[in-house]
Amino acid sequence: MSTAAPVARNRAICLQQELVVTLRGTGSIQGAEQFWRHVDFTKGLGRKLACYGFAERDRQFLINKVAFPDVNLHEVDAALKAGNGLLQLHELASGRAFIARDSNNQYKAAKKGLKIIHTARASRSHGEVV
Image (tube, rainbow, N blue to C red; front, side, top):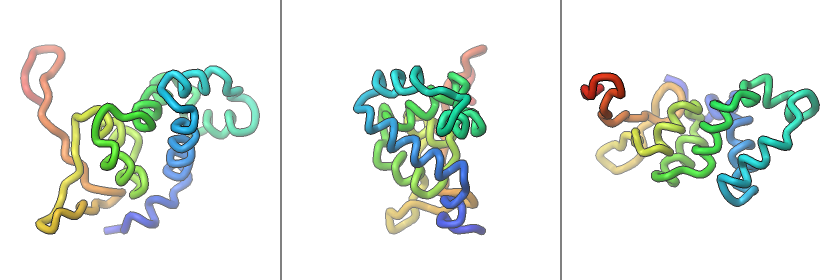
């Protein structure tokens, strides 16, 4: 099992961490959306963001939600620092997941970052629990 430190040194994870800091620097979700409108995805930082998929609106929405979570701010920050992926971070930020804890109330490590537990939610198509 790898530790959180090597995972957090991954280029994509480092970019996510830097991007969250930048987006939080805009002050609000509206500021973050304004940030994306001004990024030129053909030059400099914008080109780097495009290489990691952030030229797509759905990826921008996910990272905006991570930067400004509805719930679990401390858990989102811990998972971001530990190197969890964007989709897991988004689940935490949306309240559809939480980080597993051990008997000492410490976060549990996983292969890549922290162990994320998804809560049951209703399926959109048939109303069944997934």
